[in-house]
Length: 340
Image (cartoon, rainbow, N blue to C red):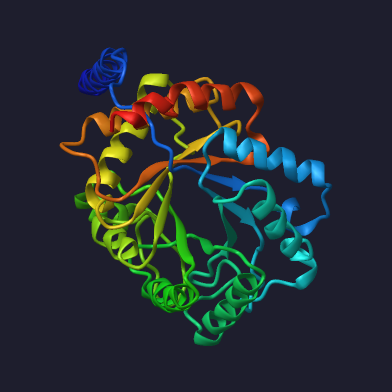
């Protein structure tokens, strides 16, 4: 029993050191400022319901004031066969036209996704060629309606998912032929790729004919493969579930540095930051996330060659005070741009 007590005390001591070290690290203010290339996930009602001209005007003003360059308007989700019923996007054409009037220059993308079928669980099975074909037919519908791009959010995506890479290859052929964009939302990467054997042993993925054991997070290799196939990668960095601001801030800083170092020269990157109410709202909040992203940028040896910014999740949960924090903590001043 004494040995168990010593071991427990040792573990608790290490945890206390980690927490105190993170707190000390967190006190310094970041030097990096934010950027003017930023994204926003927007609710389905914009695509599925009618809106007044004043509502469109207000949305456009919000996007311009906060220098949002890309909006992912939820337009799905996909059905099992890769289609989207027309009733779900009956207002899509009017939305695109309204954004041209009230937010010219903002890229309006169709946000499409579904629970990816894996080992018998989920809905849309991307391993089936005819399903991928139908997804592409659906993409064409939204591009024909005037959307500037297709934004995929299929979950879960595991780092052996070659069918998803095939879908990205074919979708990019389509979007490039139309002069449009392809973007993808993806989970935050694994903290340490070398832990994959441990994940495989301890975390079962499923119980199908070919069960695989590891979490649905991209490895470095898979993240690069994604980046080489799309115009934008939006990393869903939120859902941290860490109990203090300093630990949550370290999470955002670490992933920002890691992702921008790995793919920042390959594609535009948006680091997802939350405005919804997560499991631990006292720690994971917009102010903490923005400071963490800036700290991560500070850790880079040089800035990426491609544009980068943050992706705000989500339009329907962001209140006026959070938009004010975003502008003050993230957006560079206009005078900063004059000296770049």
